[in-house]
Image (tube, rainbow, N blue to C red):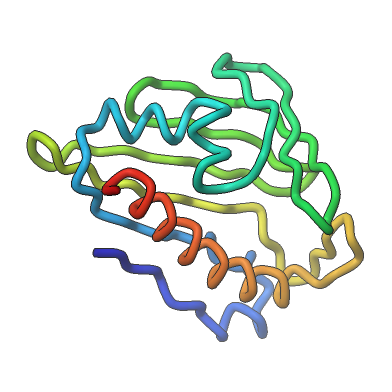
Length: 151
């Protein structure tokens, strides 16, 4: 079961930052197994993208984003097995939050922040447009995480 928070179009017209992307997926897997998938290089590659991730606060790593090139990232928070947060490029932050609902069932929440109404990505695209595309993209990626863990 997954859910995403709807895009708030009113944020486009105001001076507020655009809302974070938030995707929630309930996984039929123990929290330790979900953490392994969310906080190791091999685990992240299985459902997200190739990378040079190192599970160490302050560590820098690369996400190999295919046609969009390589993105520099830095681990900003590591609280096993509950939370990993990293800066993605110059503007974004991504967090993976895990919560054990019952033995063998874990809630995984992905939070992608750093969106601004007037912002433009490093690739020259408006945050508004990229945020909408990435919200849908994250929904599919989080479902892929479920497929990997529940296989």
